Image (cartoon, rainbow, N blue to C red; front, side):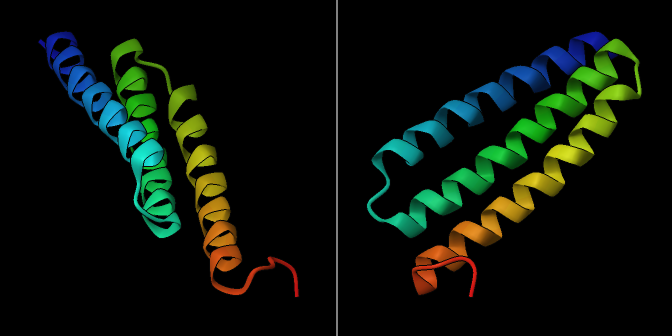
Length: 89
């Protein structure tokens, strides 16, 4: 039962990933693309967590946590670059 639910949720997350890729490619401005990139990271984390539930290993949850931290830092750096033109002051 859990396997079927994980497959259905994985399909929904994959559709969301495709829609995010579309917004990343066709976004009207750089701010929209930054938001699409952040949402892409969140959806990728969801897919990693679903794989962890499906396979029953805790390693995927640690990978998701590390990916979330790196995704947060890159989003902040990219938004700071869009705001000021440089990352390191």
